[in-house]
Image 1 (cartoon, chains in turn purple, blue):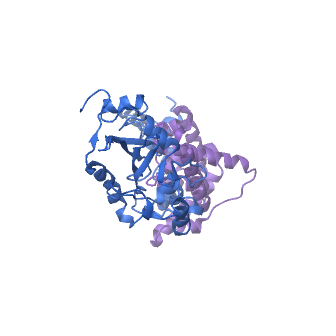
Image 2 (cartoon, each protein chain N blue to C red):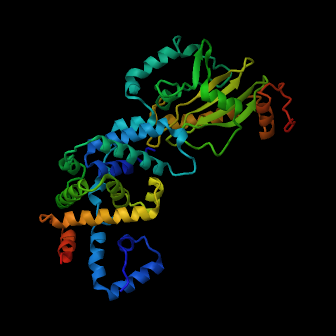
Image 3 (cartoon, rainbow over the protein chains, first blue to last red):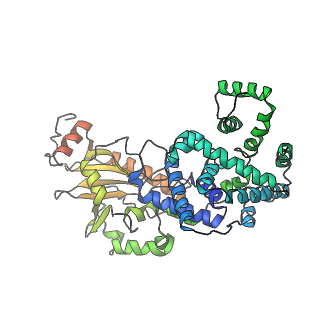
Length: 172
Length: 269
């Protein structure tokens, strides 16, 4: 479980976009997992089970928050990224753009972006974790990414060259 | 013109298509320029474009998370609370522990041991102290009473897996066991069955964690050595003989009340 913590933190950070909230979510996830180990089916992936717990906890939290302000703490995230100025700049802006875009997505779509785009899970693994058909994963995720792309493309101040090229090359 | 669904375009962008699907899609791309502009949003938002989040992977994991996973509650962690635990369990100190004759190897872990000994409110104690030391309780007692050795299905964290059963030179049945933990090696122990049915703990370790920071008595890097010691100690006990699986099963079915050295089905005697 310890070896899985960095990935779980990244997943939680992708959902919350706030390191403190991400660590709270990871802590709650681990506590719940440890207290319910008897519910984990040996032979299935422990990671998948913990992703399911984490996203359930996060969705519960989202439902209980009627109004939610932006929880972005970019500077804190930048603090994790080392001293390469160029990298920091690119990451900073990309993180800001992506985070703002994700803020506008429905929670179930944010979960899919975090699982597939950030963590790199396959559609099939995501479908297994969420216990939904793979077609549902793909249709939700494609809608999420089109919306995310619209937001990023509309963000005029993104100097990431790769993203710029894609953004401007496609706005016709 | 064939309409290509967004989902297929996305799957192509993400590399989650078969070779045949890829070939088909690329033939479509060649004949339908509009497809390329529909592809762009998915390429721009695909895996690999979210590296901004990857910094978390190499960032140090906060202690509070590590402690949660190791089962150390904030109130019971590290140096402050642990001596209290031992003072409660062993008011007379270690000197009175009945370890003579068993290689004087009573090793008590602290890290995983806190969960093992039931200091966390959510964990049922696995051992209980009495005036002579401590004996198995709760799930540990049940496992020693009823679980055959080396059940490979017992692999999730928290499972108690008896490793082997021996009969010592006095005819007592003793079992080595381990508790599956999150690290390289979970807590291990060695317990012998008394006439009253209690499993008296002879050896107990706290286990080690993957990063070597287990809080086992002694130095951290000794944790693994201590754990491997359990097996060595058990195997080196004088006059003991390992029971076969058939003998063990026979005794489990009889509630461990078989006469010493009869060995049930007779194998090994």
